[in-house]
Amino acid sequence: MADSDIEDALLADGPRDATPRDRRREMVDKIVLTLGEFISGLDGRDERSRASVGQLMAILQTMTDSIASADDKTFTAIMREAALLMRTLKERQTYFSKYTIH
Image (cartoon, rainbow, N blue to C red; front, top):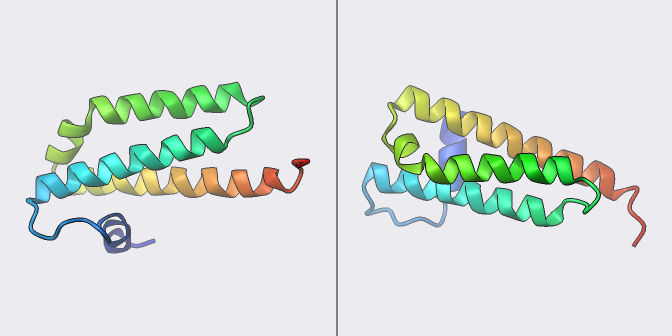
């Protein structure tokens, strides 16, 4: 996924008149919300993964201002890693859902 694709996806429904820093804050907030959705979708037996994702959410929430204020290269690297993590979590969730008895 290209850097511009990540930003476009995260800003798809965001206000276009916001400052770049505000838009970046909104991106980080969306990532935190998405990670929260992943936590709620994780199997209750997988407490280690839930705890890890929860810690990451807490870190992102604490560092939102710093991330939003980072230089472009650093911000892009953080967003790329977040997109990779979310994609991996989604793939894992899809894989294990095949073996879940409903």
